[in-house]
Length: 67
Image 1 (cartoon, rainbow, N blue to C red):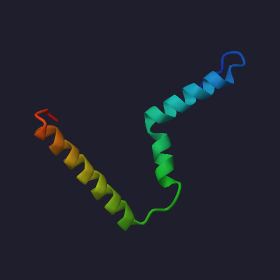
Image 2 (tube, helix red, strand yellow; image 1 turned 60 degrees about the horizontal axis):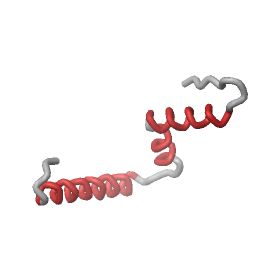
Image 3 (cartoon, rainbow, N blue to C red; image 1 turned 180 degrees about the horizontal axis):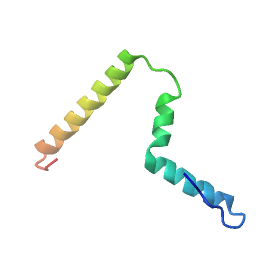
Image 4 (cartoon, rainbow, N blue to C red; image 1 turned 90 degrees about the horizontal axis):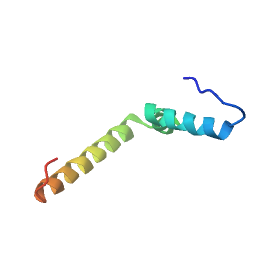
């Protein structure tokens, strides 16, 4: 990944860098890998998020919207 700095506008270059990292998903990946997470905890987190998505989808369908 390459970010060009025009003049001495480092603040703008940092903003562009952060946006590119966020778009690529690297920031979220770094946050996940910051600390070791046991496989059992990973699985429970994954299941909890899936249940949350299912509940949200069910609420949308109940309100008459299409998911």
